Amino acid sequence: MSRDSFFHQVYELVRSVPPGKVVTYGQVARWLGKANGARAVGWAMRALPKGSDVPWQRVVNSRGELSLTSQGKDLQRALLESEGIQFDDRGRIDLHESGWDGELPS
DNA sequence: GAGATGACGGGCT
DNA sequence: AAGCCCGCCATCT
Image 1 (cartoon, rainbow, N blue to C red):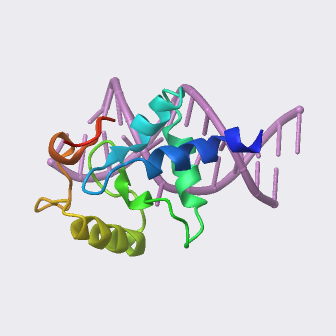
Image 2 (image 1 turned 180 degrees about the horizontal axis):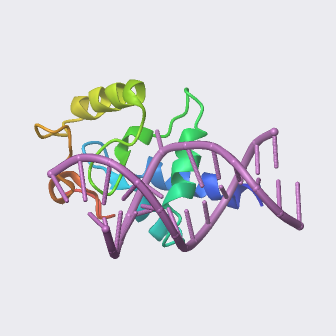
Image 3 (image 1 turned 60 degrees about the vertical axis):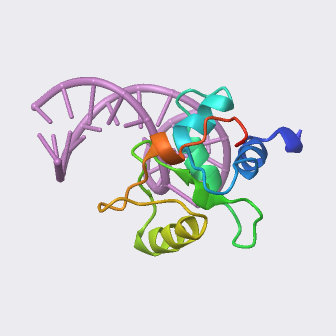
C-alpha cells in the first residue's frame, strides 16, 4: 500500500525527531529494518519537495557531517543552528551530544 | 529486465 | 588523517 511505501515510512520517522536532535541515515534505515539501506534513506530525503513538513535537516551522515552539496549544507547548517545544534570547528555535529536515540527528551 | 544514480556506511590503503 | 573502493537499498531511464 502506498502508505507503507519506503519513503512514507522514512518521512514519518524523520517527523518524529525532536528539534535540537539529529539522526543518521543508517540509523533511520535500521529502524525500518534495512540495516544497510542508508542510501535508500538518502534517496527519500533527496526526493522531498521543498514545502515538505519533514525536518530533513535533522538527518545527517554517520560522521555527524552534512552530506549535501554546498548550497544544501549552508541551509541545513543554518536550520540546525537555529534549533540549538552545535557544530565544531570542522562543521561537524557531536552525535553523542545531539544524536537522537529514539527516546523522547525529558 | 538491465544498467546507472545517489543527501550512505564501513573497511582498506 | 584523507582518499578510494565495494556493498546495500530504492528509484529512474
